[in-house]
Image (cartoon, rainbow, N blue to C red; front, side):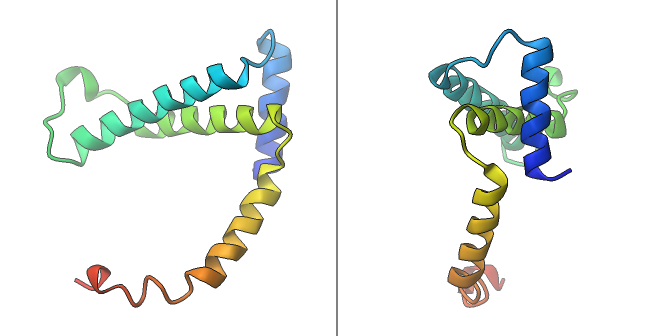
Length: 109
């Protein structure tokens, strides 16, 4: 599935199962909450914090999908073609960062 189709699927879900999109500020708060859940898993599972027993069943993929869902909602409600924006960003990064990371001494160890 490409990003454009994902945006359409989210829009259809909102129209079928939701009442309407939450407003942009609510969705921004929701996005922050979802990113926090991802951060908690990463910090405890891959970082130096110990993982609580209650966190061991958390699914990182599911939490990342929650982040993606809200990002797609924000794109839809603000009229952003995220596929076009992503494609443009990848071209820009390829030009700008072509040698940047290869020349980073910090990444060579």
